[in-house]
Length: 205
Length: 197
Image 1 (cartoon, rainbow over the protein chains, first blue to last red):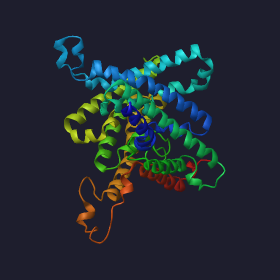
Image 2 (image 1 turned 30 degrees about the vertical axis):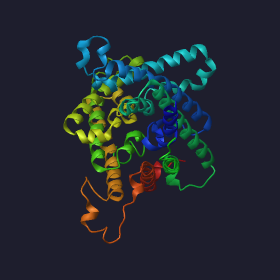
Image 3 (image 1 turned 180 degrees about the vertical axis):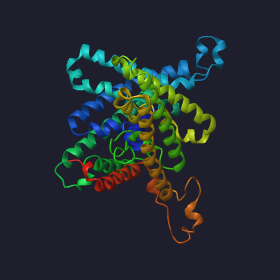
């Protein structure tokens, strides 16, 4: 339990998706103009991460990892399908995003209207695929830790995009050199936020 | 002119994710730049060849499959010939799949142009991406670790003896963002028409 909490806090603050790995930057820059839409996208990304990463963990553990097919037949213990992992992960993500979209549309039209336009975008968001790839690389011990990691990194992403959106809303009223307007200043502010987040480094619970 | 006026990173703002994470040193930056150029060019060519047979409803899935096939190939080649660099790049090779440059060019160009034009467009965009990637890698490695391609330049020049210190912040992730911001700033103050209102 303590280990799970540790992973959760680390993935929100220390290993933040945006500030230390630059994942999901494209939508981060494109959708961070107002707080409201960025909150919607943040919630959607967190939700999709929370679903896809544990599913990909099971897929990796029981199908793709070296010797993972042992449960099927003993002779399969030499089979190593890990070279297929990237392509399988992206297929799972695309399928799950599609399914989530249909389920949400059926059962909660209000939520669907709020998230609707963002859901298809998420399939090609690097933060989501990155979550699955990091999960594979860091070799978490069990599904609880994986879920904690997925939820934490989603929340960290949400925090980052809502933060930058709030700053950009204020920024509209300040004087910026014309050449820096828009993308340029957003990059520099993200860098400064990243430096602020670096002060969380070394947190250990 | 994807080098400057339509540079994928500074003007179209695509493919930032991978661009920043791999540029702390020159060598991984160059490897990444080459891989992305190869993937964009070939994916553009393939999609352009089969563009008339792709049903529009499922085109995203088709594009994803083509791109991820190419990325798996690149990944395997890197693992075979440049194992240490491929370890350094870790997940970022896999993340070429969701690199917005690839999907963006496929959607915007390859779906509507002839194979030869698409190939050129892919190579051009890949090179535009490479220019930024390599210059970031150059600046960050030179000032951050005082070396180039692993060769200790500053030490050989005797700068340390003269009291020079490496700027440790340069190898940290946030500095990459600030540097890109500065590159955009320089470029836009020279090309006034690129400025945002």
